[in-house]
Image (cartoon, rainbow, N blue to C red; front, side, top):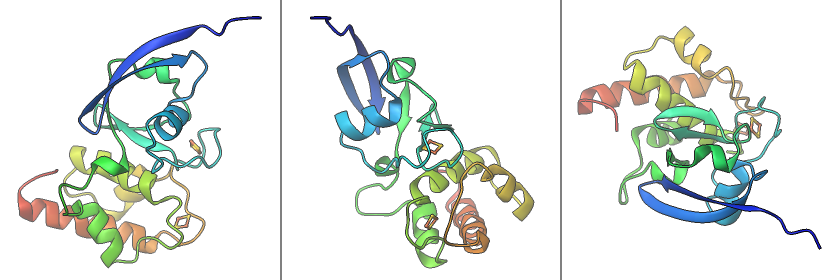
Length: 165
Ligand code: FES
Ligand code: FES
């Protein structure tokens, strides 16, 4: 019987350290969902088109179906589950709720995290910059208008609060 070679990886996810043995072929999105139980990163296409699997690695938006878990060894990862603090939604989550930036919600975790990456680099993006930053995140429901509006209002409340969180 052939033995599957396992590799030990360690990473911080939403501020919690994890060490696990994984197969070299395990995709990061599958590791997050199946090993860590963080199912907010959705699997839509597995071909790097839809953006549903987007997470933050070192603060930058990355499609986690395009990374192997072993490539994230040593990384600091944030998933949608790590965005709220205590009982308070992150301003992006709140504005998506308030401005109806979602319908079925399948794309929403990835879209919010891609927007988070944008707002850490650009605190006051215009609509064109928001659309450009989110062009890798497909939504089959909303028509994007309310997503752009939600990102704009989150940016405004984050500026008011004095920075990104
Ligand atoms: S599942 Fe990763 S981009 Fe679609
Ligand atoms: S809200 Fe349904 S795919 Fe975007």
